[in-house]
Length: 321
Image (cartoon, rainbow, N blue to C red; front, side):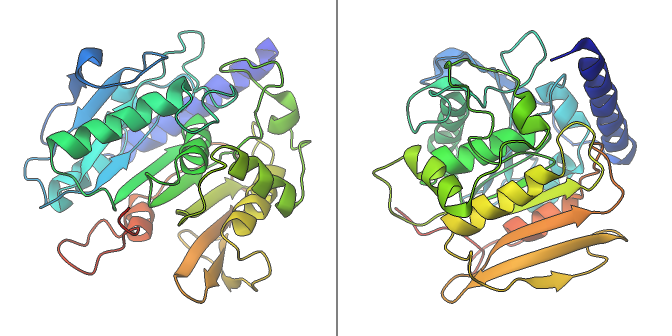
């Protein structure tokens, strides 16, 4: 990646951080570091940070929030309202920290991270989820992931490689699962072809990419919400179209007519929604008109999609394995 692109990317991410920080409310408890020896496997040594709200909901849900490039777990924690809202609704948050010291981006390119139980950053993060499930009697049917930029890319990876773990995802300014795959097997590799929207596939081709991550799996797939700015200067807007083709095919709704909501979430944003006959709404794609890579997340949108305000019975969840 050229230096000018790196500088632009860093500036873009910095603006995201500032937007988050300006709107964030302080969480009541500190972020906890969990030692690598306490959970595993974690082949790439992803540092594990945990937020436990003041009062846990019974069988609490889990929300995983991987940070953006040049970010940290601490920055994600202090820069989001989601941790503060956890104090209200009792869910547990996992803030993984990228082990990539060069740019703090996630490994979304290696065959290990893109394959179920094969290694990479994705397995380390899933090990964190499994630790929380065991230690805090969390709900295995209500595990969610969300992120922005590189965090959105990792969200796609987690849902694609571990459909048996996650119930839903929310990716803000990301790319399709497998778009960054490095044919040379590199971890944390930047893909100009993907970033500039040049990697384009049919829905069937994208579906094959996802299914290859876990060929034995034929079960229930997590629902997904993807959002992207129309003038994103870092990850081309074409990547939203590729995510749409991928996830509608994976979820079996590629031939369903989407419903459309204008001025959704924010003025000028348009959301298309796909439903199937049995599960209801399974996929959303939001186009943010005039928005660059500095897309501002909306905590209430995330909570609503994951149904995290719900406690007790009747909450959105995946089938129990």
